[in-house]
Image (cartoon, rainbow, N blue to C red):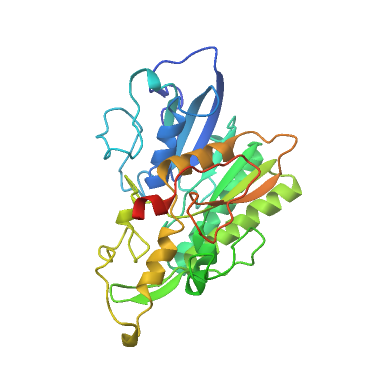
Length: 344
């Protein structure tokens, strides 16, 4: 049964200042890698504006998460240095609540939790990894459709859909630098689904990518039709769990399967396997650092200005030298990190 917990007595992460502007953010899939990083960021005073955030953390805690709750509190053990700082002392200004939600189904518990929300970041997917099946993909599409419908019901001003680089996954065979192939821009036709064959893993991310692309179309249509005031789709690169170092990126393209470390997979092309050097370069050149990812999400959640677009697609990569991704945008995202500085 879906329910809302801590709705009356929300948990404080520190001191609140009555002079600061207060806004409410909802995050679906909040218990995962990106969701927990984003929650920590918004609950700390590290942003570009003096906003005190209340964050509603939506996830299927008892079902998909199997009872694992990952609240953003100072009691959590620290990640390796350089990851992102956990809440501590006077830096913590926000409050949060956990909202149990299986967004495959419309239920008043989680739907009504969107009342009064200023922005929602949609991360939830039934299988949030590229090895998702077509059934996983169908359920993920249902989750996005339900989220947009619920946001429209409660007039949420801003919906941010976290899409994926896998919408252009098949482009990896052309090359990963501008020296090899053309730029991938917002207007470039999709080439859905990273697919490759290496000794450790046969990957076809088409079902996963199809759900992400469908979510983009749903949000675009909702914004065009007026049921959603404004929306941003982030075609996110690769932001690994934890410290997210480029040196730990794998030719497997997923954190769920061990192996595939750089330099370890050396099967010859004559054996029928794909070019792993090119594949790894493709993944590395879509890297986005933790701080760039958090800046991008925060910019995406800012209110629509008179000069802003009602709907925008943004590529979510760091400023990686010679990459094919065009990260120009109108929301003010200005990444600072470069994968090449870490790999040289």
